[in-house]
Length: 144
Image (cartoon, rainbow, N blue to C red; front, side):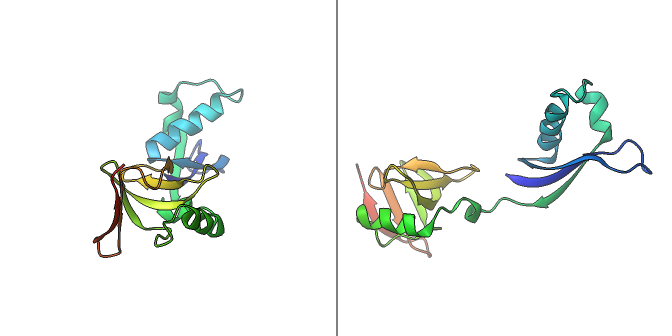
């Protein structure tokens, strides 16, 4: 997910109108999301008409570290689950899907951001899980 600044620009010489910061996967999807926001009581125009007046500027990209949870909570869960060799940002494979450990959650499990996703998923740390070091070598494996 990226962060964009979006606004309406009627003409080149007019001041920007309704400037907002919006999260989106692409500039096009962000403009559409912004248009939906405008439709909610502000304006009722077709997207094809409005999109010509929308401006969008990327101000930040997605980083896995944006999903990191509280380090103290993460350490507590790792100790309780006997995986104290792990760290936030560690490469992991769960049931054949590669990802990165980003934290721990209230269910006592780990949060993993899988490749191609922009959010963390709740995973049991021992269920079909492989842990890798920084060089990609397998450190620990749980089969079931």
